[in-house]
Length: 58
Image 1 (spheres, helix red, strand yellow):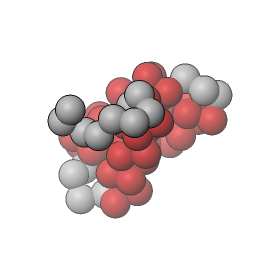
Image 2: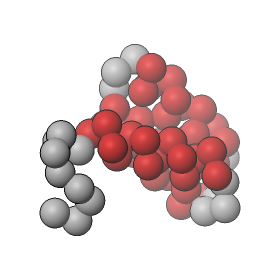
Image 3: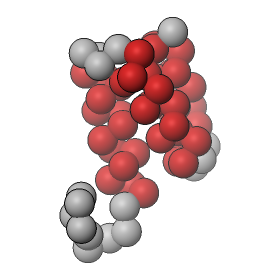
């Protein structure tokens, strides 16, 4: 099921629904933490949602 969440997240991201995509990527990583594609998509979605000029943890 992790792949399905990752795929749905990718579709949502392409539609500009980044918050929903982020939730799907998080679930994909929760289900399969070793999936590099899901982890990469999660990281990218987090970067896109982060206000510009800020770093994680700040």
